[in-house]
Amino acid sequence: MDGYRGTPITRRAAIRRGMGAAAVLPLAATAAPQTARAVEGKVALVTGSGRRLGRATVLELARQGADVIVNGRSNRDEAESVVREAEALGARAIALMADVGIEDQVNRMAADALEEFGRIDILINNAGARPPTTFQETSTSEWREVMAVNLDGPFFCSKAVVPSMIANGGGRIINVSGLNSWYGTHWPHVCASKMGALGLTRALATELGPHNILVNLVVPGGWDFEATSAEDAAPGPTGGREIPLGRRGLPQELANVYAFLASDASSYVTGQTLHVNGGQLTY
Image (cartoon, rainbow, N blue to C red; front, side):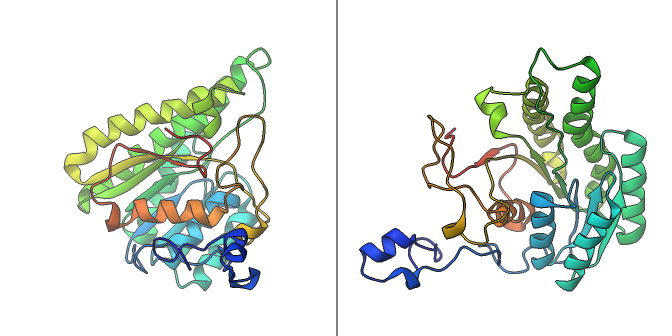
C-alpha cells in the first residue's frame, strides 16, 4: 500500500518498485475511507437509486449504518432488488416509487418514508434526465421534462424533507451536477438544468445553515459500470479530455464521496462544489 490511508498503487508503480504485479490491491467495492458506520442511525433517501450510481450509493450508505429509501420512477423490480441488497448489509430499507419532477408524487414519497422511519436525515438528489438532443433538436416539451427531473426534482425533494431535518437538529442534502455542464458541451437542456443545481445548492446552504443542514453539490465524471477494480477500469477519453488518472472511475469511488458528505466528518463543509472525475476537469 502507498499514499494516504493505504491508497492502492498502480500495477506500473508496483513493477517499477520491484514489488511485482501481484502486489497491487484492487480498488474494490468495499468500505469508504472514513470511520466505519459513519452514518449509523441515520435515514437516507437517494433518488434514482434502482441502478448504477444510485444503487452504489445506497449500498455504501447501508454499509455505513444508514437505513435507506430506494427511489425509482417506474421499475419497481429494480428498486426492490436494491432493497434486498441493502437489507443483506443489515439496513432497514424500502422502495418508494415516484417521479421526482411531480410535486404530489414527491410529497407522497416523503410522507411514506416518514411514516416508516420517522425521520429523513440525508437526501441525495441523484435522479437525472439526459436525453442526447442538440439545441436545435430540443422541443419545448423535452426542455420542460428535463428541467422537471433535474431542477424541479431537487427543489421538490428538498422542500419535502427539510422540515424533518429541522425537527431533528440538522441533515445533509447533496445535489448532483454533471461534467458536460461545466464544459458547456452537448445537450443544452441538461447543461442548463445541472448548472441550475449549483445555484440551488448555494442558496439552500446559506438559508439552511443555521439549522445545521449542510448542502453541497457533487459533479461526477465518467464511470465504468463493468469493472470491479481500478486495474480493470476502462481508459478515459482522448482528444483534449484525458483523465490524468488514466481511467474511468468506479461507482464505489463516487459512493465513498457521498458517504463522506453524509457523515459527521463533513461537519464544516457546506455550499461547496466537489468534482469527482479523476482530474479530467480541475476547478
